[in-house]
Image (tube, rainbow, N blue to C red; front, side, top):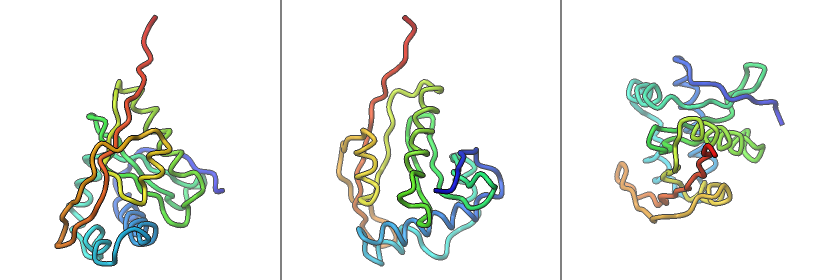
Length: 164
C-alpha cells in the first residue's frame, strides 16, 4: 500500500476531488446501481462553481500519498455529526483508505465533542459503515435527475470520554 496521510482541504483541490468522486461512483458503485442511476448521481457535466462552493463549505479531509502524489479519497464531518462525503478512489480501493478516513472522522468527532455520527450511505458503502459500527435507521429512496437511488440513513453513537 502507498503511504498516505490525511490533510485538510485546500483551495484548488476541487477538480481532483471531483475526479475521485466521479470515479468512485462510476467504478465502485456500478455493482449496486444502474448506469442511469450512476449518471444521475455523478453526471459528467456539473456546475464546477457549485461543487467548489460545497467543498469549501464542508472542508473535507483528504487522503493523499505522502509523496504529495495521488489523492486516495476524501471525507468530511459536519458540526452536526453528519458525514456528507465519503469517497475512495478506485485505484486505492481495498487498501485501508476508508478505514484511515473513518479513524480520522472519529478522532475529529471526539475533539469536537460530537456524540453521534450519521450519513446517507450508498448500498456500496453500507457494509463498510456497518463494520465501523453504524446501524441502519432508515431505508431511503432519493430522486435525483429523473432516477431513484436507494441508500440508507445510518448512525453511530459515540462514547464520550468524560472527566472522572
